[in-house]
Image (cartoon, rainbow, N blue to C red; front, side, top):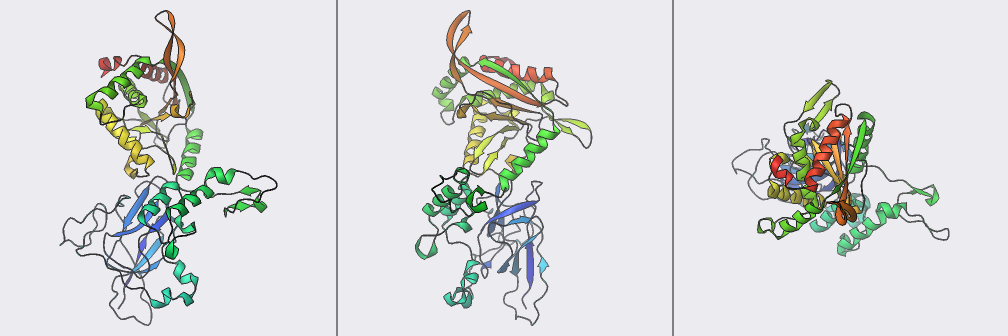
Length: 454
């Protein structure tokens, strides 16, 4: 007889309590196998593709695309014995074992052995030989006379590149009006939806003689627009409020002549050993900060309020604040203190590319010890950045400009920038913060100083 098992929203291993269902990779009635892609979810930190936990048939999808689901809540029900005779009373569904570690966004890992069972593995639930099959859906579900309710339960028709674009632009594909053949969502449909639901569009007010936008979010007769706070924006808000009202921030500033840094960047770009990486001033300031932390390791710490302890870290996970289509993320370069300049450039480039492509793995978003926020590309000279929770300091790197500067007793045009270091004044005294900033600026002014400290 049919035997039903329920799959619950797993803990993505990030300390979060909920996730958004982005895209179902299967539909009700589909035959599925262990480890085949089941559903893509979005947490406040990353996109994660969950593998199927069992062999069988999808009996019901218990969460729709776009729903926010708490960890532990049921999201799917499977018939693990579809060949059995249907009983008069449906059997009680049993729980599917929880997922240990979710699969990365791109795809589930390949099976390691065709003879293994469905026991839990690192990125899924086990292995199973053979290709996935699709069982024909019930005729009444596809019958046009049957009504729209049945048809609407199935996933939106869209090609993988279009779904990927929707994720990158922050568009819930279930809300997009399809214009392609057979109800297919096209790239143009997603781009139009992104434009219509962007923050700029939703915040723009029309003239008195113009009708309000048909965005679906308008309230008060079009005089205001309310948008749910979800995912990255929600997590960022919670973290910043917690940081601002928990850690007493102090910020110190330093204006530095970085002409030699700019000369070094040009030399490295011409160096054949650095032709495979992108060399920017950010690379040099990252190395300068790492050298300053080496000289003043007390800054590389965190405050444990519950235990009333200061935790000094014997490693440096360097965070780089990155603006992405999903919002502000801070991925980290793990053990950055161990990397020579070329390897640091490689990691920095990979981190930036992954963040912009919305492919940052969850592991890269946790465990940071100190952060750099690069506001220079936006034309900003400096700022007072807010600490990431659990970190003692964050460095703001401002725009580099040509300015008149007193150099060797004469006024010359030099490359100048401003650095700002915010720190937690509970355990970082002003002197320590000032020395870290001064040493960072010292390496930026004279990169050769790094050879002495390295």
